Length: 261
Image (tube, rainbow, N blue to C red; front, side, top):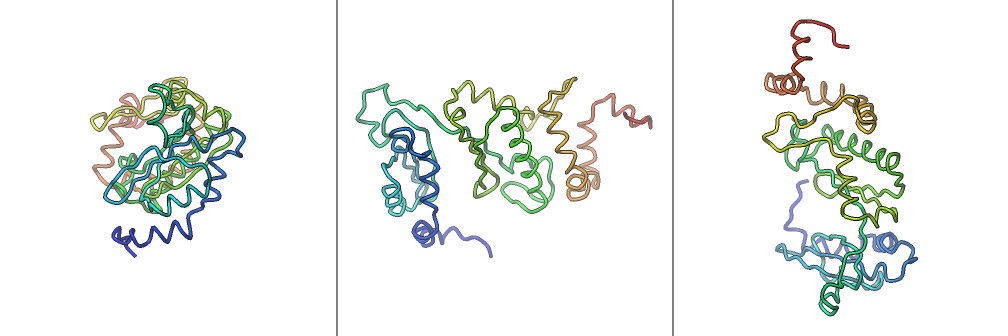
C-alpha cells in the first residue's frame, strides 16, 4: 500500500503515544547517567508540520522529553551535540560561553549516492536488489571502525527513507575534535569528484590496507550483484561506461586478447 503523507497528522500522535521507544532512547543518550547533566545539556531539534524547524530543545528527564514530543508530534527529530549549558537556556548565558562539547561520530550512507552503479532504481527508490549496496557499505564501514580505529559501540539504524546511519558512541569518538572527525572521514573516503568526474576512484600501488580489506569483501558480492542482478554488461551504454573506467594499459591488453594477471 502506498504511503500517504497526508495521514501523518493523524498517525504521529498515535506513534508517539504507543510506539516510540522512549525508554531505550533515554537510556542510550543518558549513557548511564555517569556524567552529570549529560542528557540535560543535549540539544534536540524538531521539524514540525509545514517544515517548521525548532532548535535548542533540551530536557531534564525522560518524562519531560516524552511529554514534549507527544505535545509537538515532530515529523523529524535531530539529535544534536552536548553543550556547556542547557540548550533551552542558550539565550541566558554569557556570549561566547555556550559551546558544543561532544557529539557521537555519525556516518550517513545514502542510496542516492549509488545511482552510478545501479539500474533497478534511482533517487530515493530502494529495492531488494540495490539494498545489497547498503549491505556492502555497512560491512566495510563496520569492519574499518572496529578493526582500524578500535571503536566498539556502534549503532546502525535505518534512516527512514533511503539509507542507513551509523552512530559511533564510544566515549573517545564523542570527544573527537572537528579535525579528528575530518581525518576519520578522509581515511574512509575513496570516491572523489562530482558529476563531471569520470574516474572517481584512483588506486595507488601498493594498495592501502583499508582498501585491500574492502576489496576482499566487495568480491564476495560483485558477480551476483553487478553481473546478474544489475547486468552491467547487458546494455551497450553500461558496457561503454565500464570500459571508460578501465585503465588504458589494461584496456589495451584486453583488446589485444592477452591474459590479465
